[in-house]
Image 1: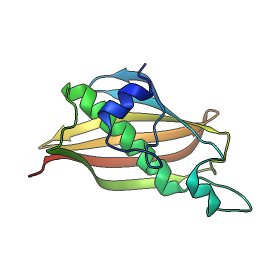
Image 2: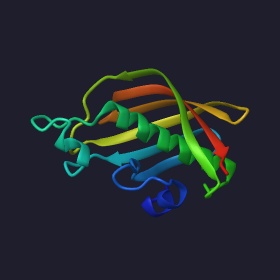
Image 3: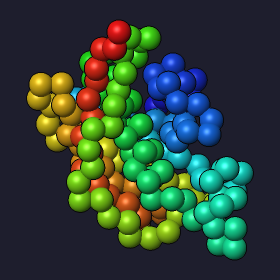
Length: 146
């Protein structure tokens, strides 16, 4: 299990865009299980929607991609540096099954499907109370920048 301090060392994201609070399980090269506590204090709830706060689907996908990045860094036994960046490269088969609201705990399971030529493909599922709320196939890549 990895806490927020380790996550902050691995991911460049910061508030309000860091969307993983804890790593619950990790099997290098295979899968990761992460947690996002969804609170009413999230800045996106002010406008999405004031009368019925719902976590935007695109942010659930981003949380899954951040989880995938943590799996990739652990698998490669690497940390991001100033000349390396991890990009979200694609999304396929994204589906949103139920709304995610303040007070929910988003449990994310991301499994590495394949890695080839620096492109990583994952199968990702987010659940609340055991119910699937979001699922997608994600593609990510790590690139060196000047």
